[in-house]
Amino acid sequence: MVDTRQEQPMALEGVKVLELGSLIAGPYATALLAQFGADVIKIESPGTGDPLRKWRKMHKDTSLWWYTQSRNKKSVTLDLKAPETQELVRQLAAEADIVIENFRPGTLEKWGLGWEQLSSINPNLIMVRISGYGQTGPASQRPGFAAIAECMGGLRYVTGYPDRAPVRTGVSLGDTLASLYGTIGALMAMYHLKVNGGKGQFIDVALYEAVFAVMESLIPEYSVTGHVRERSGSALPGIVPSNTYQCADGSYVAIAGNGDGIFKRLMHAIGRPDLADDPELAHNDGRVRHTEMLDNAILEWTQKHDLDAILKIMDEASVPCGRIYTAADIAADAHYQAREMIQRFTLPDGQPIDLPGIVPKLSATPGRTRWLGPELGQHTNEVLASIGVTPQQLQQLRDAGLA
Image (cartoon, rainbow, N blue to C red):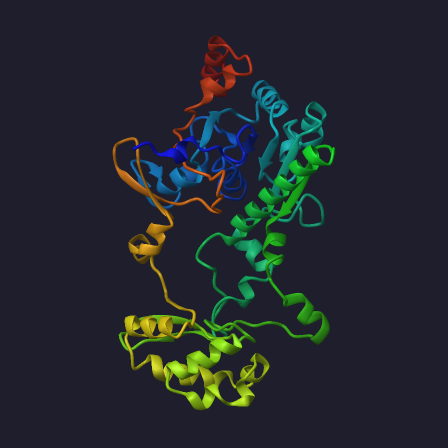
């Protein structure tokens, strides 16, 4: 049977993207575009390539992370510090719709590849610039990683338990949030250019600002009341009940019974109709005043039941709840499989590998994985030939260690 999805159009077909960057924030933004059909050319250092190729778990000297984040990209090796190869990058930028970079501010300008230089060649160019602290301001020249951005953006301080040091979320959330904002900015700029008759522009994304932007009511609450939000462990502060509770079998379950109607169903499900019918608890502001009592009532019930029994009872009562998923749980989950969020591919040596499915799901122009993260420099010949570099010229660059 023919897989007709391979014949469906992709939303960003024809969009040319040049990636100048490494690791996560810039490359994840280009990954999102590549998954929906953009032609992404990734520039990597000759010999070593993107450091992500060596991060976390490896398979035959290549990071397994690499295969998913760099899928659908073309790898070209060029030394960005050399004048000869800088000129080739300018030629590639002249044909690009979008350039995405995540160097420290000023680095590309030093190489003759900054916004002023590239936009003078290509006035319609859209450039996404992701850095720790943004292109301007007193901290702009400081090195910035997601770990520091999550601290400055306010996320780390409110993450963890109140009697312990702040903790990280477990993934580089500051990087991926910045990537998402950068991608949104690029698409908005493309719309402005193509629909409103605008011109090219650059998008300035700071890692700490991407984190800060999702901090909900943190600043309004401080501004009006002086309240400083603190760490609250597994609970959702000010929204009750919503917490993680231990089960009889030692596992944990997350229960979110904070809607007024849901709260009533939850209380009946755990055998507490007295709490369900208490007018003091009818709305969230009243329940907040009795947070500890409500959490204790739910915990007393969950500690008498195994996880699977709790999930069944909560499901029958239409109360949002769920197990705390591990990677193994995700891989075995029927809903993940039905939604094609776990997709199997094969590495060059025949090793099967599962990758996350593509988000979001577009009904008419869905994204898809066309190929896995490429070998270092796999597309150098093809891409440079497209801008007129002859095999002899390319060999000269390689002999000099520049490609």
